[in-house]
Image (tube, rainbow over all chains, first blue to last red):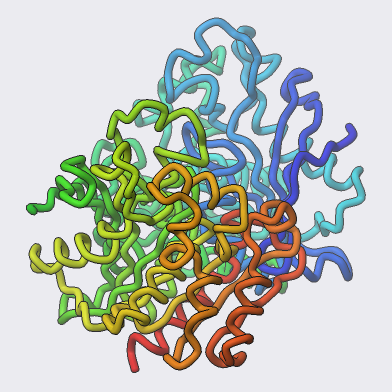
Length: 292
Length: 292
């Protein structure tokens, strides 16, 4: 699928490029993504760190506010910022709520026939975008990939990472998340999304789309996971994130602090001020594995 | 005037607080500002760096996208982000254009009677905000102030700094700007703003509101000025910024590279990607003087 360059901004001696293309995974809709290429990408292929944004976001929010570009430029790593959901599917009701439909793709492949043609962000992010980047000849080394994200995007990053490890594909070397929806089958956001997108509802989601459920059945495969959440995060307080459940499940199957690190950050909330505070830390965490 | 706390976000171990208050300088309208307090502000007063945003912006844009908070936290410096203009004055036509009226206060004290009650961002930024912060007992050392800004805000920073030096008040120790409107009486944006806000129009602006004009009549007072602009900046190419005029005027009265540094940054544009790339550099520049 041919890429169209929408815009380009020089940043930290590298380039932040917005592309669009007609996405087959999203049922023929146009999809945007941003790709940050560090300066050293002009001399050879660089590793790829994929960032998944949260509810209501597009490919732009974290590129502008995450504070990742400077650290990525220093480390010589590219960052891919996909959109969070299909745009313009025209499905009845998809624009009614901020936490379902447009802006809330939840990184699944929908099985409910109403959404199955368009709402396939899992395939879009893990398969279609890497293939599209490779086909376009962009200077990315797809053998070196890691993934991170925020909130709904933290859910996406954790489940894509764990699914890929479990299946033996091992697409990503490491995973991190800011305030992830870590046990979505047990929280209102996740229950609403899965009930809508999946024919089998919440029950269908357990094995594929719930990081806590998935990791509770692993334990042998080495993992590299870093999670930060803030104690002043209202969504954490409301029980939408449940990072303790994820931590408990990881410890329950024997993952120690070196393999699954979950940090409670005192006084931080759910905003980009929180993300940007720990953004450099996350990029450096991934660089350890991407450049190993 | 009593301050009302609108919101607070922990960031980089410090706090970004949004306040609102009824502004006398702006004719009784409510005004917002953001104040970043680094962690060390809990132990004593800290220096104040004021950041002025450009056309269409509010107090939020640069707080979110400028990349200043991390470096300011490291240096132990507070950053004040005022709004760019009065909000809700209700003057006929003030919302008609993006480059005049709401969102485009141009950091003047208006003398045209139509705007004189409300459009006084110069007094708001240089006098009212410091007084309000002091009266509220916030941990700011007003004897240590510097100022910087972007585009229209770069114009504001340069003219406030130079005016204050020239008058002997010496409110600011250093000044920097990203892509400033450096010679506004010679560019369309400035001519439009001055023709509207000032009774004497562009002619009235020359002595007070044009950094190139002001510096061309100085030369004895030591100055500390840093300016960056990008060669791919469309507004630079269109002749809205004219940094070369400012540089030429500074050199013409004997300011050398140590006192007035104007850097052309290859390939950068007018966006926050440009600002954030050099944001840490500007904060460190000011820290040299604020902590001396």
